[in-house]
Every structure is written in structure tokens, then in C-alpha cells.
Amino acid sequence: MDRLQKIISSAGVCSRRQAEEFLREGRVAVNGAIASLGDQADPERDRITLDGKPLRLPEKKIYLMLHKPRGVVTTLSDERGRPTVAGLVSGCGGRAYPVGRLDMDSEGLLLLTSDGAFAQRMSHPSHQTEKEYLVTVTGRLDGCRERLSALTALEDGTPIASARVSVLERRKGKWVLSVVIHQGLNRQVRRMCAMAELRVERLVRVREGGLTLGDLPPGRWRFLTDRELVDLMGWERTE
Image 1: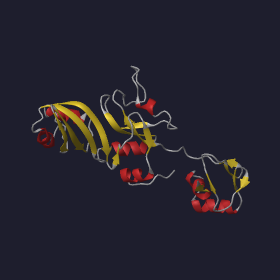
Image 2: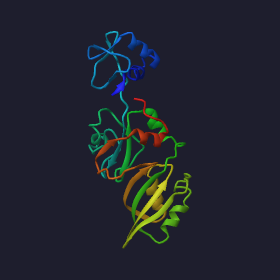
Image 3: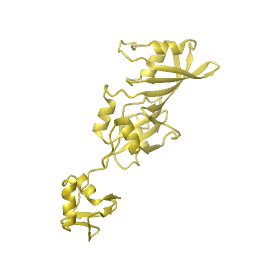
Image 4: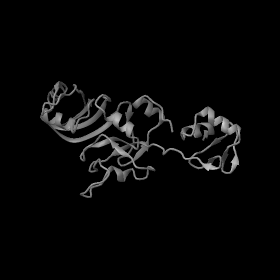
């Protein structure tokens, strides 16, 4: 529920101050009843009119986090009939596009949105949000943390910022690493591991900025909170 003057101004009809005047003049109705200044309504459930005409509200923008499972492609459709992230979030109430990518064999936190400006800003190279991955590796394990941390370019010469690497678990023949990067280039962590003579058995993105995957089960999604949007982008949701 929001105050009517906020709902009217958010629809782009007028300023909030002008909306207050419309309410004082009795020009606004909710479900057929004349509204007063200070009244509230639910724009998704109530019929709000101005001078007898229904108020046209802007489409509500979608911001959500998906726990992408292994074997799902980060596209809206796939010509080969493979499962897509779009199919997993089909119940979100709109068309949401992936922000960045996780390859088919990778898992974990994936953002999706209907807000093009949000997607562009999050994907822009200047917006170097930390991304943390839990990576299970085999191969040349001794000294792997140091080799990964020392990389400043990929195999094709593309420069990268130094990763922050720590060993979380040592099992016989395989280790679990935390790898924190900034750029998020195509298959960056896998390419880094290959350069360090490591084979990736499992790769899960668990954090992006201050947003963590937490206990969200694979294949499930949830909407981002206003607080999470502020932490990611520094601005409040306006809808």
C-alpha cells in the first residue's frame, strides 16, 4: 500500500505536489469512491482513476536472483532444446533477462532483470563488482593458490586484475578454492585454472558484491530486496 499522491506521480502524470491538489479537488477515485489526501491504495489490486480515466501505471521492473543449476544454459531460448534460465524463472511475472553469464557446466548466483539500464550498468567494465566462486579442482595442487593469484593476463593476452585465492578444503586428490575476481570475463575462472595446471570439477558462484547465494536451493529464485539493490547499485527502487 502506498499513498495515492506517490502512486499518481510515479505514473508520470504530474508531480507529487500536483497530485495532492488533484486529491483535494476530488478528481481521484479508488474502486469508484472519491479519495482524499492521505488515502492509500494498492496499485496492483485497486482501480485508481483520475477524472474518471484509469491511471496507467508503469510496468513494474523485475530484479531477481536465481541459483542456476548445472546443465542449464544462460539464454532465454535454445535451438537445441536444452533447459534455459528463462524456463526456471517463468513464474516471476514478466520477461527477465540474464545479467552476465554462467556457462552450462557452472552453477550458482545469476541475476536476471527486466531493467535494461540496471543490466547495462552491472555488466559495464567500469562496474567491477567482486564475484566469488567456490571451485573444486584437481591436478597440480601444490602451489596452485600462488599460481592463480599471480596471473595478470589470460592465455590470449587479455589483462586481468589479480584474483584473491584461498584454500577452503583439502581432500585427497582435490581441493576446494575460493576465487574472487572483478572483471568476470568469459569463462575467466576456468581459463585461469587451466593456466595454473588445474582441472575444474565444479564451479559455483556464491557472491556478487554484497549479494550472497545463501541457502537458495538449485533451480529456485527470489526477488532482490530494496536493501540489496542499494548495496549493488547505490540507489533505491522507485516503483
